[in-house]
Length: 107
Length: 122
Picture (tube, each protein chain N blue to C red):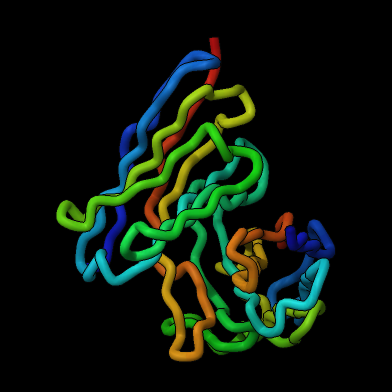
């Protein structure tokens, strides 16, 4: 089974900061990597699919990059509504798997 | 409006059973693969099960294999999860999620329900 590892597990940042979250797969998954945002008590929301494609309606300050085993989600200028938990997820294997999550908190 | 609505959650004793439902609306349900994803209290997301659009292909996470059964009724625009032999560690919010593919078969979960809560406790 493919394991997904995110780092860091949490981070503190200020409004306007550039934030980078990393996701590593235990084997190559090409570009079969998605990113989701989840706020407390809410369902996850798709941000990025296929490693770097921005989902419709998602602000352009969110971007994704990477291929193979190493991927990055970047928020170019953190906004108050971006404080949430972010998850990566691989769709290369039929056994879909999520990373452990990265909680972005207010500094 | 594209929508998924889960139901069927509740309190059940260890070893008991529960059947979750997910009602789809606003899109052609029979054209999409579907997933169940769960989230234990204070924990991250865990993928549970996948079913193809026709229902002919099914996958499960190792943690639920042999105990849970995913199914769908395309005539009723509904997805189901039959959960048997429930354990305390199955306590979670259960989400159904639509899976969409790009033209070159990159898959992603683009529509999610609000979830239904399952509590396994004596």
